[in-house]
Every structure is written in C-alpha cells, then in structure tokens.
Image (cartoon, rainbow, N blue to C red):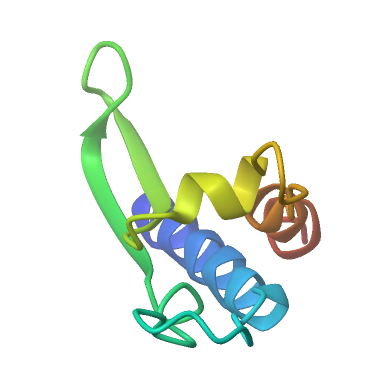
Amino acid sequence: MIEADMLFRAERIAAAAAAIAPVYEGTWAGARPGQYKGSFVVTSTSRGGRRKDRAVATVTNTAPYARFVEYGTEKVPAHHVMLRAAAAGGGD
C-alpha cells in the first residue's frame, strides 16, 4: 500500500512536470521538439532507502539535456521544471 501511494504521487509529479515542460521552438537542425516533455519516467521499489527497507518512487527525465533545462546554463535561464512539479503535484 505504501509503495502504491508513492507511485501515485510520483505519477502526479511526472504529469505536472510534463504539463509545464518547455518545448524547443528554435531552428537548430538537430532539434527534436517535445523530446524533453515526453521523457519523464517514473520508477518505484519497495527496497529503497539507506537500509533498503523503504518504499521509494523516483521521477527522472531521460533527455540528454534535462539538467540544462532544470538548472540552466550561462546563456539559458533555469526552468526548474522538476522543482515546480514536485511542489505542485506532490501534495495532497
């Protein structure tokens, strides 16, 4: 039951992140618009934590540039998608 609750919350956070994720609209030839938005993945386990005795659910983004979207670069401001999604989608 606890693992199911964690998984439910993680799925809500992933949905909130996808809803607020930016989509690239530039003209770069190698661009794949929507890749970041569609790369949120939810995983869970009942063997998490330091002593492997806790339920854990994780939301990650598998896009190769996800950290740059989240934290920004010298030329591009941070979007804090995961931070905002956790604040908005993780609560009751």
